[in-house]
Image (cartoon, rainbow, N blue to C red; front, side, top):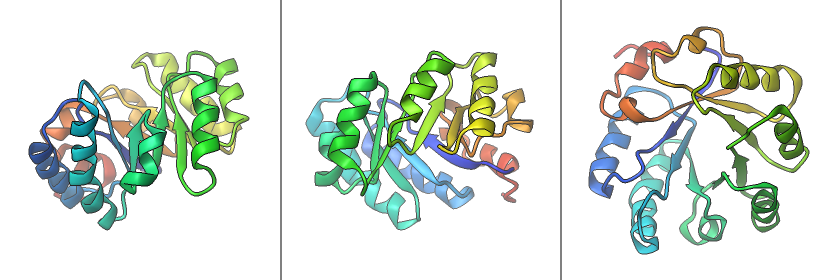
Length: 190
């Protein structure tokens, strides 16, 4: 496939379990980006999670992104942040982290909103409320603009995966319990 793999970790996995799953997936397929969701964790627990996962993933060439926490990127040595808030939150993250860190955004509701965010100094736009229009919007963005498009696949069986033009495809959910399921999508033999 022409896209790179962008993984979204499970929201509330415990660090030891997630570390083992990250290791299994990185042994099975090449991954470009790993987003660590904050989920329902208290801040100290999120910090512990990032500290337990990020160094290993980064040692394998994976960019580690934090979930809506630009304030923790530098102290924890992460590569950047994924912002799902509005334009104001994206601007604040850019002001805090650019040019040395990645700032990406998601939660895009329309082409107009995508273009407004794309005018900022962001590194990617993530499309994916698991509706058909999201694949279409991700393709439209990839064909029209230079800022990379990330398409959040509904599953590894998502029909859009055979035609998607996005630079990155994000996976979450079931791939964490079956890391070899990604092998056939990426062309890696298991």
